[in-house]
Image (cartoon, rainbow, N blue to C red; front, side):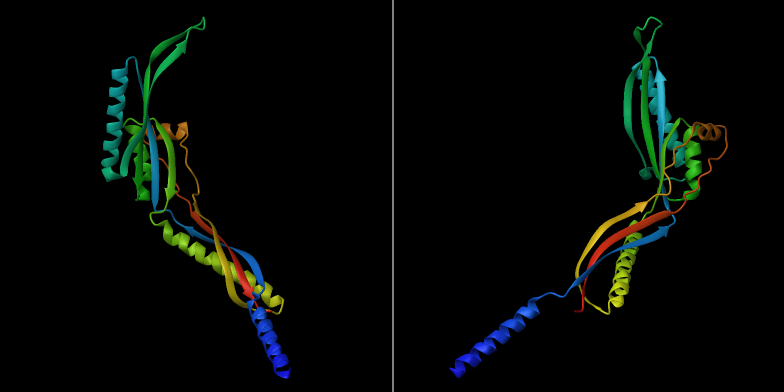
Length: 235
């Protein structure tokens, strides 16, 4: 009987120890943010060519000629042809309304977009001016970016994790506890925000057309990352 009681006691002690060992340590959940600023080293410019004529063949020929002139003027600045592309070609009839409200065909119009990737930011204004002086009559957009944004995003993520750890250490220390491990890590948004998406005004386009160089300031890009971390803490 004594042997049975002793055996039962040992089994209960082992079970209690195992149960206690299986209870995970308490956790603290924190969020962290990392921000890195970077100077842009690439610009993407989109200009438009709009032509109008009385018949389809004329408008298509005029648009093709203008687009070719725009591309050649950009290449003359030292931009590689592989960094120039065309797209968003549209061809539509143009109508006008008479005094009595009747709609009549008034010709045709064609639009074509030329997109340029510029890695020398000193050429951005010159590219815009050259395009506007050689057939482009619209500046659709100008966006600044990074050729290798991964390195900046990785650094922002590292800073976000350190920020989460710092917050957790402050809170845990105030409670008289310590961090003993990491339960989980969730990576949230990781983005690069541009300082500005330029839209050229009519006045700027007119200045470029008469020989004034278009002033462009690239500003600063912001790379940000967010994480959520669950730290295990001492009991």
